[in-house]
Length: 147
Image (tube, rainbow, N blue to C red):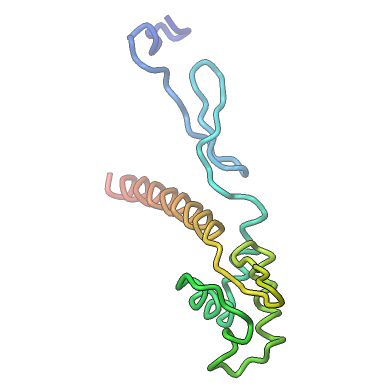
């Protein structure tokens, strides 16, 4: 029995109660035994900000849209039909390459660029995680207001 004269969850045959505590490093669950375990939290580190910053430019989004079709493209192919210089396209590709969204593959004397989807998947997981947190918080607010 607990100090208050109630049966503990283990004595009742159930799972120990857990309390969700929000910290600056994300949610932590405190279990009855006093142990803490962190909730699954994808990519909430400092590497997320540069990826979002790289996606915040129209030119880089257009380059990613072209590369995401699955073909490797040279800088001259990427500048066709745009008013950008090769130097400007190169600068934007280097920004995307620095956040691992684009890979440069050498083929002979030519540099070909290809889309690398892994950072986008990681950002998607992170946004899904944040979205679920907001859904939960709004659900609690709704229950509080209506209750």
